Length: 225
Image 1 (cartoon, helix red, strand yellow):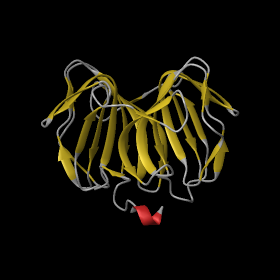
Image 2 (cartoon, rainbow, N blue to C red):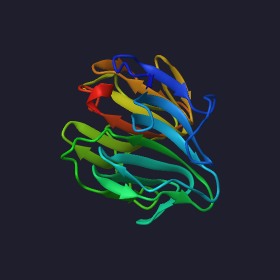
Image 3 (cartoon, helix red, strand yellow):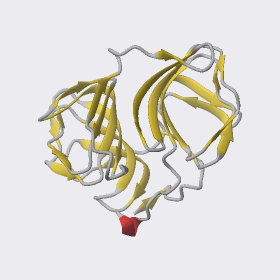
C-alpha cells in the first residue's frame, strides 16, 4: 500500500475530516496520513483506542514515535497521559492498550538504526524555552543527526520570518490555529512539506504544534523496509 508516498509532495490533511480505517484488532482504528507497506509499514497515523482495547504484543524493528493527543495510553513499561511524548527505539517490543481510551499521533519504521535511546517526556510537566521571536516558546523533544523534534507554542498574533526547510518539515496542530501564506490549519491538521520548501508562518489566535524537521531527505521505498 502506498499513501502520500511521494515525499516531494506537500500534503495537508485535516484528520477531523479524514476517514477512520479499522485495524486488524477490534476497537483500534487508524486515521492514515502517509504509508509505505501493508500491515508492517513505514507509516504516519492518528490511532484511536476504544476504552478497554488492546493491541497484540509486537516489535518495532525500525522504531516507533508517538504523542498522546487525548486519554491515556499504556503498555507494560508505563502509563502515558495526554501530552506524553514517547520514542521506542529499533528492536523494541511492547503490548499496547488503553483502559479509558485514547488517541495518539504515531510514526513507525522511521528511525535511523543507530537512534537507540528510549525517550519519555510528559510535556505538560516540562518548561518551554523562549523561541527565536517574541511570543514563541519551544520544547525540544529529540534530535538525532539532522532530525529535530519539538513542541512549539505560539501566543496570539505571533509571526515568524520566512524560512526554508532543509530536510523538510512535518507539523501536527494540537491546539488552536496555525497559518502561513498557503492557508489556515486548525487543530487536528497534519502538514508535510518537502525538502527545501519555504513558508512564512504565523498564528492569529495562538496554537500549539508538534514539529519535526530535517528528516525527509532520504525516505525509503517500500522494498527497503
